[in-house]
Structure formats: structure tokens, C-alpha cells
Image 1 (cartoon, rainbow, N blue to C red):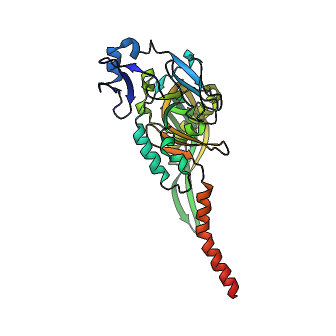
Image 2 (cartoon, one colour; image 1 turned 135 degrees about the horizontal axis):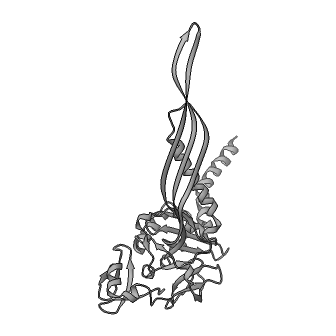
Length: 342
């Protein structure tokens, strides 16, 4: 499957982004360039001014794949059906950031086969050479939320100052203290899946990503890969995320008050400042399998940065039947024999 292509400044051959070296490599003259070097040598192309993003839509599952106008898409990475050109990508859907692939296809294949070693009842067709060849590197869409949380806490706490015994009675003197706590914390990249379609399990199962590797978006990072277009706006979970951040900041304030036997909270407030949402693409290796009988989709997903895996596997009923026969047939024979003698 052809995807976005940038030309090599040395020979004019196609460049593809290499996860291992984090550089663009030419498959013809073997030159390699960083993003910065490419921008310096080809400011127009590397700056994306000549690259037009388009959307391919799968008529079967609805997956929307972001790539450029030269893409020759042969099948949907998710359900393996043909995809068709729909139209250009609107500027509102251009990502702010991208976490580049750090794991190449060979390593993803190795992780996949290692993951399957303990899965005894998976049909061979799921991991045949033809099937593994369909493993696709896809950038999935996420929203990330960042802000500065300012917290204020006022409370009254109790401490036992002294204890004494008089006769047969033990006395404890308690002192009450006014407690005031103020704190500030920077919250970075609270992440939410930006897909509501059926393939969201692939997207959520491989989280989290390490945001330290996040880069400003450039179409060049998609070279050799594909990308999904988001279909969820952050407005759908604004309140949920803000509440989560407030609760986290509030819990941290309360954790700083730990020297008292009893605490009565009077004021607890968290204000969120400089809140911002960013749209980011993050890397996932995907391998999907459509059962010919039921039409159900099964999948393997590998975080293209960290290697974390998740999946939903088909079961070979023949293998499973043989397993049960090998285990229970001898046991059944023994029970029949014992019953005969009894």
C-alpha cells in the first residue's frame, strides 16, 4: 500500500519515516535525514505546503483514513474491505502534535508472534504469512488536555496534645488547629480517545503513550503509515476531564494534611487556568482478521511507541475440540470402567 511520499534531496527517490532511527530514509541511495534537515533542504515540501491531505472512507465499517492525494489504498486496515476517496481533509482536522512510531514492522511482527505463543486455540489463518503481511502502522487520533490547577483548602484539625490517668480514668486533651493549604500544579496531556467507531478498542487498549516524545505535527511523519480521522470532539468530555483534574488536585491537597486525627473541611476549591485541548496522532500497529463464517472482526494492536499490546482473538473450534477430547476422553473411559466394576 503506497502512502505519503517525500522525495530524497540527493537522488529524487521516495523517503519514508524510519521508527528505529527517527529519520527519513531513502530506499534508493540510502540517505537519511532528520525532520529539521529535511525542512532546511526542502522548506516547501517538508513544511507541508505542497502536501494535500485527503480522506479515504471504508463503505463497510466507516473507518476514515487520512493520507495524501497520491495514496493507492487497496484495503481498509480494519476490516480488509476496499476503500474509496471521499474528499480533502478539512483544516480543522489537521493535528497539532504527533508521537512518531518508535517500533518498526519487523519488531511489531516479533511482538505479535511472541504474544501468540501462549494462545493455543488461535486458528493458523490468523497468523499466516499472508495475514501478518497485512499488519499496518496507523496513527490513531486522541485529544490531550493540559492546564494549571490552583487549589485552596481551609479546614479544622484535631491533635491529641497530652494524655494522663487519674484514678481509674484516662484523660486525653485535644487541641484544635486551623488549617490552610494553597497549591498549584501543572497538568499535562490528560488523554482521551477521539474515535467512537467499533475500532476504539484498538485505540484505548494500547494506552498510555509517553508524551515526552510528542512532536509538532508534520505530514512527513505519516510517510509509510496511515492515519485515522477523529470523529469525537473534545466538547463531549470537557466536564468529565475537568472534574477528574479537580478531584486529583483536591486529593493532593488533602494528602498534605496528614498529622491530624480528625479533619473537618470548610473550604475546598480548585480553579483551572490556561486550559487547552490539543489534537494528536499516536502510533499503533494493527492486525485485523475477519472470520469468513461469522463475519466478526478480531484484532491485534501494538503501541508503536512502547510495545504494549491488546487484542481480541478468534478461537479454532477444531483445536479446542481436540484439546477437550484429549483431556476428557481418557477420564470418561476410566469413570466408565469404574462404574462397570461397581
